[in-house]
Length: 148
Image (cartoon, rainbow, N blue to C red):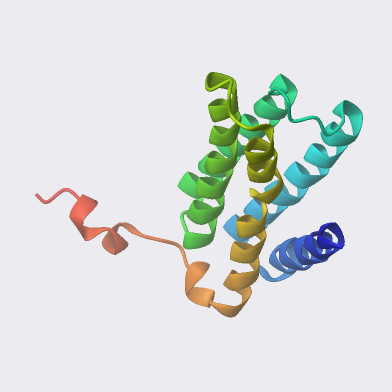
C-alpha cells in the first residue's frame, strides 16, 4: 500500500511541477521522475538485495545528484536546493554501506527506500508555498556577497 501511495504522490508532485512550475522546478521534477523510473527499472532488473552495494545503483544515484546540483546552480530556488540535498543524502547512504561493510542491511535498505519521500514532499509543498519556487538571488545571501 505504501508503494501505491508513494507513486500517487510522485505523479501529483512531478506532474503539477511539470505543468504549473517555473523552468527550474520543471527540470527538477523531470529529473526526479526520470530518476524514480530508472531506479524502479534497475531494482526490477537487479532484484531487491541489500546485502551489498550495487555499483550501478550507486552510479545512477550519483549521476542524479550531479544533475540536480547542476539544476540548483543554474536555477537556484529552495525547491532545487532541497531536492539536490536529499539526493546527495541518498547517494551517501550507498557510500556508507560501501565503506562500512558491517552496516546492518536493514538500515541500508531503509535509507534507500525512504530517500525519495522528502523530495516528493518538497515538490508538493512548493505548490502551496510559492516562495519556495522564487529564484534565489545574490541579495538573498548577503553574508556571502563580496563587499567592494
